[in-house]
Amino acid sequence: MSGVAARYPGLTRIVFSEAEITARVADLGRQIDAFYPLEEELLMVGLLKGAFVFLSDLARAISRPSLKVDFLVAALYGEGTDPSREVRLLYDMETPIEGRHVLLVEDIIDSGKTLNRIGDELGRRSPRSLEVCAFLHKQLATDLRYEPRWVGFDAPADWLVGYGLDLGERYRHLPFIAAIAPGSERGL
Ligand code: IMP
Ligand code: MG
Image (cartoon, rainbow, N blue to C red):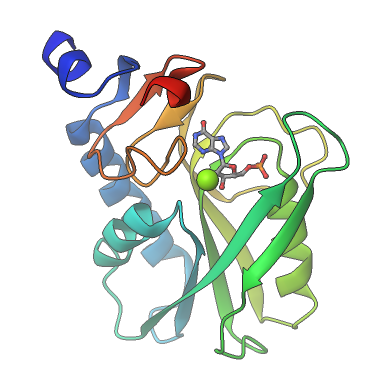
């Protein structure tokens, strides 16, 4: 960790290494592949920005003749634990999802607000099926209406960066998941 700490200020420890992630994503890909009938098309919907790295690895771990990819951009507004925090859909996809198998791909489930809001939105569009695959799950959400069928790893309650996750847009590019010290955004 010491070399990493020197190169990337604020990181306190590596939580999931690149090798662990690679192995786990391959498992998830196999499980997802086995879940859907091979001849039926799957539409993976990534929640940007955080899911961009996970989705790109996961899609390549799935081998089926028909797989499509699209994205949504959602953002959570408001401060910290304020219950009035609101999730807004900033960009909607053009692909119609009615009658399709939709797999919503999330980077991390924290309060669960994002998933509840986006799950409701997609559910209204009458997909044939709607499942969720989250790379990380903090297991803190108390009223999650869409339980993820697949989770990469249960995660600690720390703020995590890397593999698509950021702190103030920093560190999305790290190939591993690390914890970052609270307040680090001020020093970066
Ligand atoms: P939720 O709506 O509280 O479940 O939060 C989901 C979103 O918050 C995720 O898609 C991330 O963009 C962001 N988020 C939550 N926890 C973390 C973290 O530990 N590191 C980086 N982003 C996080
Ligand atoms: Mg984010």
